[in-house]
Length: 471
Image (cartoon, rainbow, N blue to C red; front, side, top):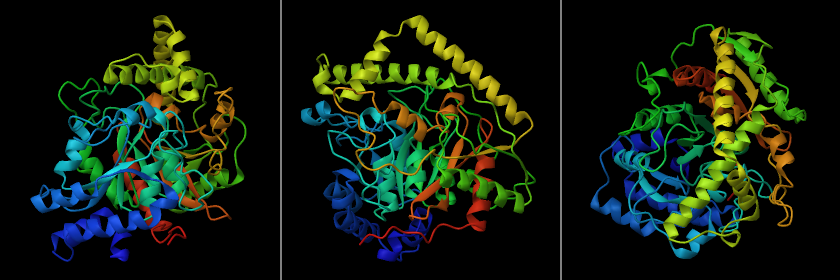
């Protein structure tokens, strides 16, 4: 069963379908693995093991992933009757539970997955590291002194550690791609409007939802299951021309590839630059046209992104106040969260409208690059995974680490603004044995192109044999 846990979700589903392993056996093996290694990692903060086994006995839906264990990120993805705390201690202390499934979680349930629990996340998903006061830090399976990233850090750490083959994740500024890079996984951020955020959130903002996986084919298969609008969704991505899983291994043609291997913030770790350059050389060897062309990124773009980020933080604070039926104070949230939310509260409606208008202009400016290019290659991150605690600011100076955070994530937020699909692939390893991701970006709506070239790279430079040195 240990070997089966390291298979991808597609292979696990095939074993269940053939009767070679039962859903209960697979769930019990995953539970044993969680109990064996999660004490050191702290990825799974809400365990629903007995409930999951009861659901298996009653009978899981006969979907394509019938009986495959899954973990759900504890952030804006409710699963009925389970805790939904979004990394916040006020919701934790109130014992808040979700009254119903979100639409995306309902799709995961209909696919036949066995829900084993919910994973750790920073408060409201605000930071690229997972160290909430409510539940403590999650640690990177490749080096327990380091962060697995965020905000999908718990999900990525769980998959990297062999607890499950696949876990739900979301991305509002890099929160799928950042932990995928730090934990050696595939992390695809879909196009804006590709997956529904209903019924409580809308698709016109920065965030999208998908999964973190070990293989490209799992990411493609899950996108087939999760893509498509819900009733009343305000942004809807164009439908795929065929199932995404059929793009895995399909011919790519000769692609026009640009490379950005310098950081908009200045500092860039040599291993991150090397990862992008090595991938560019590999793409060239595979027959693609590669150049140092890249879009020019306005340094002011980060300022307008942060304005929208601050308003989103303020809306999250207001939302938990509505849930709890009282006014939320600084004592209910972490100092960084409060400081960012207060900055959002000070922005006027005109300020926010200006941020949206600037975001639209930035999106149109960036889109011109893809008129004569197919892909952009960048490092996923500007640095190797920081040490646990390194990015946590002191309470009396809650924004003290913002410059350091900006140097860590100079490449991901732009494509939340533009809504373009982007994928982080585990194509490089540092001399210390730390995973280093490479980001590929396609034009809006072209996840098909990302999946084709990602699967080509997966064959040319396979990563599936890498495992952290855990028990």
